[in-house]
Amino acid sequence: MFGPLTVKPKNSKGDKTGSWRTLVRPNYLHQNCIACRMCVMICPEGCVSGKEKNAFSVDYTFCKGCGLCAEICPKKDIAMVSEDSKDQKQA
Ligand code: SF4
Ligand code: SF4
Image 1 (cartoon, rainbow, N blue to C red):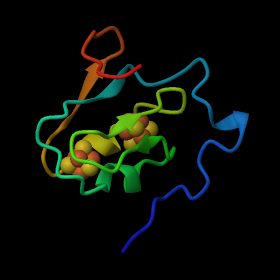
Image 2: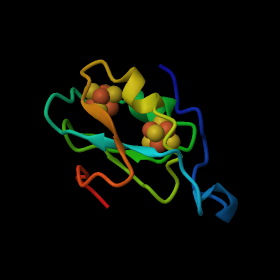
Image 3: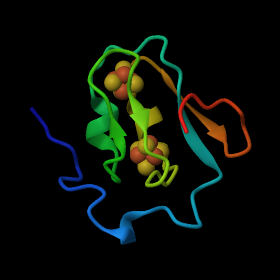
Image 4: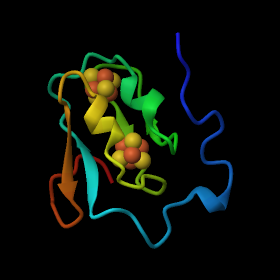
């Protein structure tokens, strides 16, 4: 079994997104999630968490909007949306 790319996320202020992110961010749809944890493992910022189906979430303080989580999700349950979109399930 593979582990997350980032072993110790959120352990320094330098990891925070701060004033920049790409113009999109991930929106977890919470409809078809099978709790495979691929999004957790691939996130380079270690900012995806969750254990149960349809209950994964992103800490936007650290998310850079790279889109890897949405790309790898086998159920297409993560949509990249524009920063101004109201399609956001968690703050
Ligand atoms: S967009 Fe990138 S940084 Fe943000 S949660 Fe997904 S994989 Fe992590
Ligand atoms: S990659 Fe998709 S299906 Fe797998 S845990 Fe994340 S949101 Fe759920």
